Length: 283
Image (cartoon, rainbow, N blue to C red; front, side):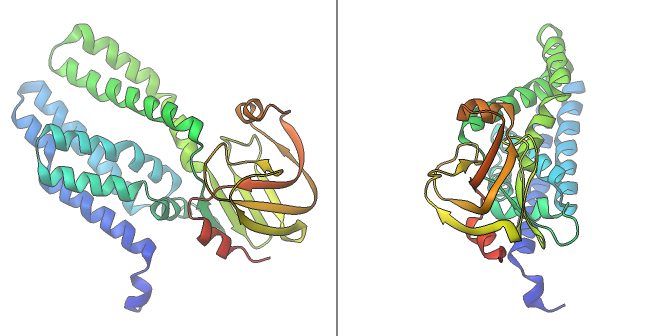
C-alpha cells in the first residue's frame, strides 16, 4: 500500500485521536488522584479511570456507531480528571481527544465502520432543541454513576447510596437515548439515498435515484419539509419528481405542528460534512 493511500484524512484523524488517548494513559490523571486518596476510594478512582480509558481505546480500534457513542460519553470525563489532577499533559491530551472525537470527519469514520456493502454514511447535525437536554442527561448520568460510587468508596453512604442507585437506573435508559444521536445519518447507496434518523423520523426514508429530480445546497428550508430537526445554516434540499409518504416522529410532528404522516415532494437534511455528502451523490 502506498503512503499516499495510507495517509487518508480518515485514518489520520483516528490515528491522532488514538495518539492523544495513549498520551492520556501516560499522564494517568486518575492515578494521580488515587495517590492523594486511600483505601477503597483510591481503588475506585483507579478502576474508573482505566475502565473508561480502555473503553475508548477499544472504540478507536473498532469503528462503529457504538464506538462513536462511547467516545462521546467517556472522553469528556478525562478532561475533568485532568483538571482535578492539575496535570497539563492530561488536560491537553484529553481536550485534543474530545475536539477530534466530536469532529464531523471522526463521526463519519466511526459510523462508516458499521456500514453494509456499498453504503456511504454521513452523520447529520444535531438538532438545536435537543442539545441542552442531551448534555444535561449525560452530565446527570456520569455524576450519579461515577460520583455515586466514589462517595460510597469514601464511606459517605448517606449521599453515595441514593446517588449510585440513581446512576444505576439512568444507566438502563440514558445510554440508549444518547446513542440515538450517533445513529443519525444520510446513507448513499447505488439505488439512491436513505435518511436514517429515528430522532426526527419514525421510519427510515429512502428515495430512489430515478425519483430524485435534484439535490442542492440551500440556506433555509423554504417550502420543503424540514427533516433537520431544527438546525441553523446550510442544508441539502432533496427535490422529488413525485410526492412520497414520510412518517415523522411524535416530537417532530409536534414541533412542526403537523400530522405524523406526510406526503412530501421536497425535504431538507443537514449532513455535518455537507460538501462531501453532496459530492458523493451522483444522479
